[in-house]
Image (cartoon, rainbow over all chains, first blue to last red; front, side, top):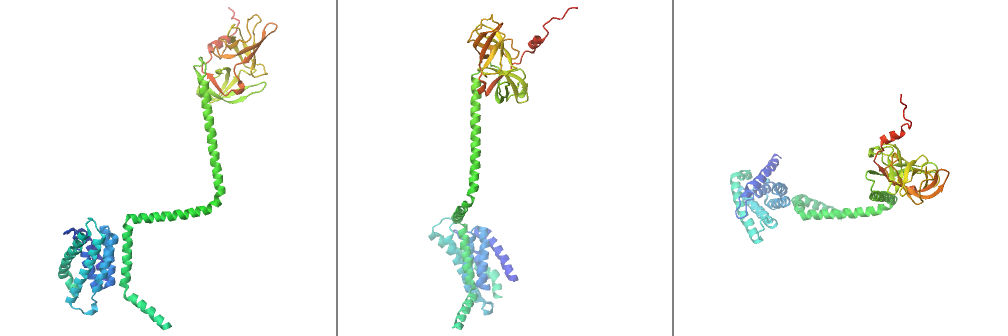
Length: 162
Length: 288
């Protein structure tokens, strides 16, 4: 129970960080998505249902900060749902390598799904879709995956192993 | 058969319990889509317009259905409104007529009517023996006792009593009224008095048979009057008959009292010095 409250607090902090820090790290209109990594971690470790719940909640918080309440909630929900397919149950006794792979796969899937949705439904710069989609999906996913690897090595490695 | 159905239902619930993530996913997606739609301005406006049209349609139906029960009340309100409008119309018509008459009396006032106050006759008592007028100007408007009251046609009477906003006028056609007059052609003087009878007919008294008064002469107020200025028209001599020492003169009055509604009050005050001198004893005091 204590763990879930911690996750909620973390969701708030990460939403703030995404809004005021990571969204500023722009490379060709694409920025890393730390919330997708967080949702992927929740889904992998706690399951698809929990991932969907946290995805929706985190998306709502992010949406309140960004102004796109509905779209952020939808992206978070979808990310939690697709990442939930890579859930590694605690009783499965999976190896750390498998957990790492599942986490990377979950993150990649969540990032692609989230960026895809975002590029389709959000167009603040009025860019053509053939420019917007590669930039957001490919570049954004690459940047976020880099962040995923870093996060795994420096923070989540130990947690997932436990 | 029953057992098979029970098994199907329980497997359905087991499936639902196993895949609650799908339900949550659908639920959250629906909420998110709703939020996205609500964020669009046109969607909100469409919802508002739809709500307004539904509300108007329901209200119209309700009003149509219940209007039958309020017909009597509506009719009463319309009647009251009609009465108010009619009263307002009457007031405006009366005010316009009054203003027109007041303007006319001022416009047709004779040249000697320099200092006059226009007043309306608000009450009158006419009988065969005693006539009296009340006008709507009093001491606040500068009216004082013994001021002359007239119209552009001629003399009406004399102010005998004053309140703040009203004044009582003793008209020419009152037994107690007398005024000194002079004929315009022969300058014959006499006293005009009304002795009952016709409201347009008065008598000119104290005209000696030696005078040269002619029928048809116009009479005006003379300098001898204690309240009226000289030259106010009073009437016209219509008949002269000889008596023992004086003529019996019938005068047709200049003012038609039957249609009198507006008057002028002369603000010139009577000369008290002249009145006092006239009322002093005629016999000089004996020297010691």
